[in-house]
Amino acid sequence: MKNLNLKAARAAKDLSQDDLAKLCDVSRQTISAIEKGDYNPTINLCIKICKALDKTLDELFWE
Amino acid sequence: MNIARLIGVIVGSTVGLIICFVAFRFLNKDGSIKTRYDERQQVARGKSYQFGFCGLCPALFILILLDSADVVIPAEPLVIYFSTFFIGAAALCIHSIFNGAYFGINNMQTKWIVFFVIFGIINGLLSIMSIIDGTMFENGRLAAPFVNVLCCLLLVIAVIAIGIKKLIDDKEDNANEES
Image 1: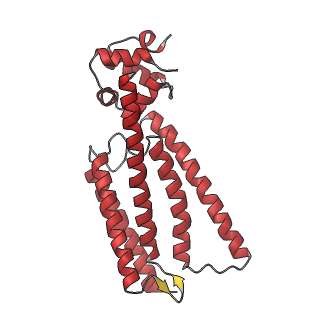
Image 2: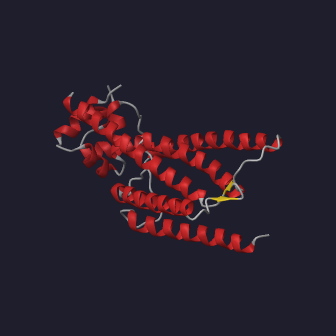
Image 3: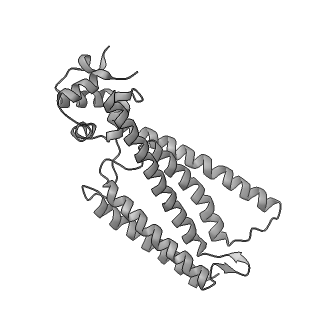
């Protein structure tokens, strides 16, 4: 299932997938895979993404 | 025992290792010789190694069958070993490229691609020179210079796969941005 919350939060911060990937120390393809719902990140990566986007885990990863 | 040939293989392998070491040092963003992969890439690469192993095993099994049937392959043992290695490496390479796990997060992709192209050209030229001076075949068998052909082929396959993957990614990104 697509993670539209993540995509919206990234867009709101005016960040590209590449920018977010650099902030989280992962590859751009990994951010793309998470947004497309092709990959379920570990809790550590979820926390890194939340910190980079100033969001909570609930806001980004809970439906 | 052919000492000259043994020394040649050892020197050749050592030079190859040194080139790889230098390449990692200069083609990685942090100057590290170790490539870093993120968590998704590590999982994908595990699968890629599985594919590589699954490619290598049937190739070795076919060689065992041919050997058992006393079939003489018109190639030197070195070429046969490299051919099986080539199959495993190609499977690993293609799978990891199409899963976005070939380049690590500290690799400078463009520079690595240029490095592959340069080494592909060098291996291609060495192959052509071997054909011209007649050293590609010895006593009707494929000789050691055929390894250059395999290396060239592997690099060409890698560069083509990287290009195709880039096209697929760009197309998907455009579709995502529009949606």
